[in-house]
Image 1 (cartoon, rainbow, N blue to C red):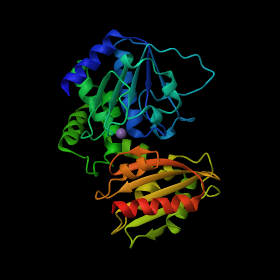
Image 2: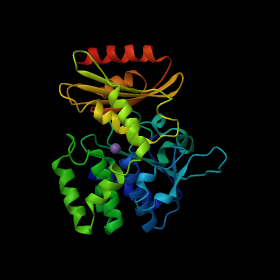
Image 3: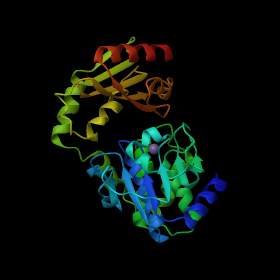
Length: 320
Ligand SMILES: [Mn+2]
């Protein structure tokens, strides 16, 4: 790992004018890892822009240093990047539109903890045992020699806290706790961070979550739980807060796989997969053109709901 990190730092030192990006529907780890690398670029006096696929920045991450630097991709803008750093994303497909802005492979860096899908970067650190991409960025920053401070430590801590489910998922490793403990020396406030990222939901979102729970269904002898939100319940602009339904879907006794299906357009659906550990939901999501981790993944589907549901039940059944 140290060799890959040194190569990445060497490349960053030489290059200028970077694109920073992450996966579609950027989450806490995507924001935190990208902004922490932006901090490093800032200290080193580099030019950079942060471009995400998402139309709207996610307000719950506005407590993070550099949040206001995050831009949405726009086809009208005149982009020109000499180098790119893609974080927390395994493929060009998962970057979405900003993938169009990437320079040639030899000028690209990838830092990620998802299973390797596409080798699009000459400088690459992919470690599936890392709890989060923010954990890998911590290692990068430690090696860079730049000093940690409260802002930077808060970013890294937030990313690790987010991806480990507040230090409770199976990826909450010894190393993740060691890093968290080290970061605590810089006046990080875990309860403030948790309040921003998890307990700042709107009244409306909580009612939508209530609808989802009331209408959830059980299949395969109680091993599969499905929560479905039709479009008229979750209005189109309604935010990531209701994604928490994915976590609820697997938080039930005897459930091995939980699915949260959201209708985005009449014939377009987003599916979030959760597993307690026995079933690899990354495999299932990939079979439907998506991807993610063994315990949490996602995909999109075009077609009708019944076809999607039958397909999902069949896939889960074959993987139980
Ligand atoms: Mn991540």
